[in-house]
Amino acid sequence: AHSKDIHSKGVLNCQIRYAPHFGIRPESKIMSAATNLDGHNVSAASHSSNAAQEVELSSRLQDAISPSVPLHLLKKNVVDIFVMVLQDDGAVFAASVIAASLALADAGVE
Image 1 (cartoon, rainbow, N blue to C red):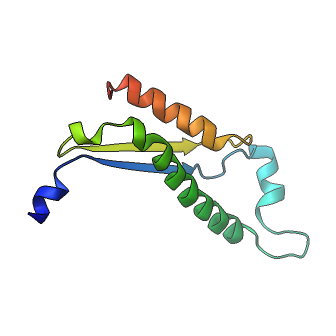
Image 2 (image 1 turned 120 degrees about the vertical axis):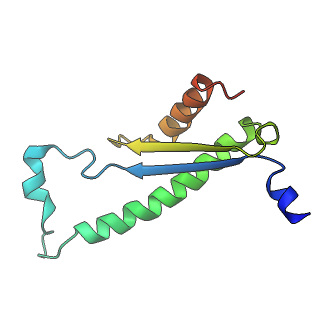
């Protein structure tokens, strides 16, 4: 009975990730990469902050997209949505929802 419940509808996976060195021009990379004004390495803190933001954005994207995906009609199917952020101008979530919606429409998911 339990295995029947698992396959009774499809699965939706959403993932938003920031590209390595996103939004950083190559000429400014040397100046900003190593340390802050106190001489401490800031790349590890920046990475963990991005990771936490990626998890939150991925969860919000799944919440926004899931009502429009008919998982009950997609039995035994998995729908994966991967968003790679190349540059952040302040509207990453809105752009991700629009991109995911367009990709699903292009793929024929009704």
